[in-house]
Amino acid sequence: MPDIESIKKEYEDILNQLSDPELISDYDKFQALSQRKNFLEKIIEKDKEIQEIKNKIEENKAILSAREDAELFSLAQEELISFREKQKSKELELAASLEADVNTAGRENSSAVIIEIRAGTGGQEAALFAGDLFRMYSKYAEKQDWNQKILDSHPSELNGFKEIIFELKNGDVFSKMKYEAGVHRVQRIPKTEKQERIHTSTASVAVLLKPKKTQIKINPQDLRIDFYRASGKGGQNVNKRETAVRITHLPTGLVVTSQTERNQLQNKENAMSILEARFLKRKEMENLEKFGQKRRSQIGRAKRAEKIKTYNFPQNRVTDHRIKKTWHNLEEIMKGKLEEIIKKQNEILGEH
Image 1 (tube, rainbow, N blue to C red):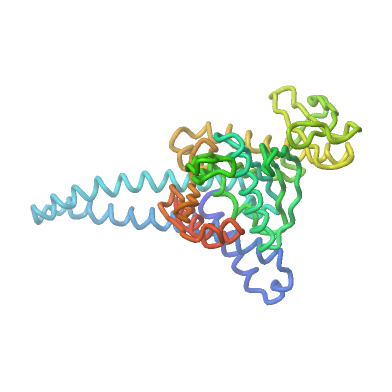
Image 2: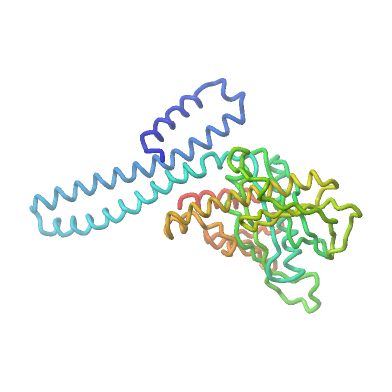
């Protein structure tokens, strides 16, 4: 695990590189260094806070040793207990940040993520909402000049999706999309509702890093690969040839599919991308288990079981329950106007 001195040394080195006028011509490197600088700054700031707390602890110890003022003595005793608790908490945060730097180094700069959207409770309306979320993210990706590729999809009968999995890349995708993971809830009158009653439905969003080739090694002998005919809306077969691919990782039981392309090879590549991303996520979660419940609570906020947002159409609002913020331009948000929301999520959730 890196120590704080090596972090400070790397930080100074990055500052020197960023001061080079020639660097501006290499935008990708400039962006990567800037994001790394921001990450290291947060670690250094935590260490600075710990040092300030230690200084206050020493000051209070001096007051207690002097025993000159009874009221001041009593206050120093109370503050000493409080500062020691803060020191312990901050040191745990610092250790977690240093460990995260080992396990997820460079992931803020990841050039690709895989987004999985699945319909939850609500039947056809949930599938329609999953489709709405997909189109919302697609429009946002277009505004960000990201590249998008659909890896797998299972359409519903009413232009929604039971499940859709797609890749976004070429930009700061992970840093902007990481807090979108979770359960999204919609409250509106469904198209299928004849009595104009408001229904509540859900869809889950998972945000997975697409690992670099050196990060994940999967033994081909551990895979079972099956080919079958792709299906469309309602489950009917739409291709005469068996181009769809199902890959099962036998040791873990992980199963992935892809049927979006017209040839087996491309669908196989898509399925492997999904499998590798899920494998990396599984590895990360196993690492989190080693650091106990407190560590999981700090980092594991992206679990899909957690309801993170409500999209209330009758009241024209979107509420993020984690940061207790509401926006009232729902129509524009569904058209991909997410920058304000994502900026606020990163600003508040990134501090915890």
